[in-house]
Length: 212
Image (tube, rainbow, N blue to C red; front, side, top):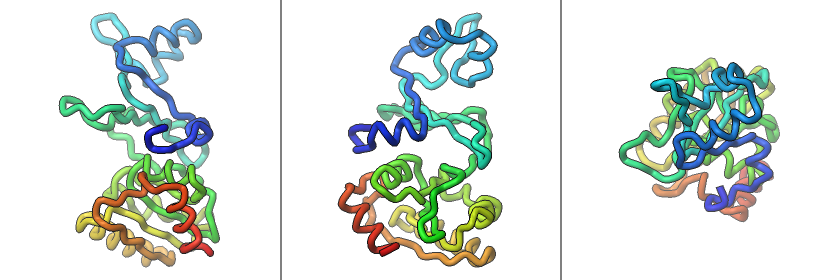
């Protein structure tokens, strides 16, 4: 998180977790504090051959909450890329992820939509607290955007990757916005530019450009 210039305040706000590169260090720490039934229901551990292992070994852990604030799942992101392991691990498998955060703090009744969780955390950390992550452009649908509209959103600022795939996805989201009567604009980024890498100064300029 420090390498991405994301503050401890933001990490605490989103209640991020961490499991180090050990098979059972998180389990060992938790078993001293919680009952077995609580640990079994947490989703943090795997049981194999009567032994317990850390499900999210060597990952930052993101709790995912729905609009009521209930934790509905967990996503673990590898701290170091490993070709033998997937970058992200989702629990429970197949969970249909809500936007994150599900209840954003809108600015002028507008929401910024980005693809990745680190994109959202970085913009949120540096002042754009109306940012939400969709966990992949293909997951955006009518239902998710209609929930934002029911919360008072009247406009959407779409910020996907600047490559062809990202812009194609942005066009699809614009179509959904049209169906819902949401104003929209797509913020086109240069290829290789990423909201997760924006500096504080860059975010300040973007906020001024979008909202005055």
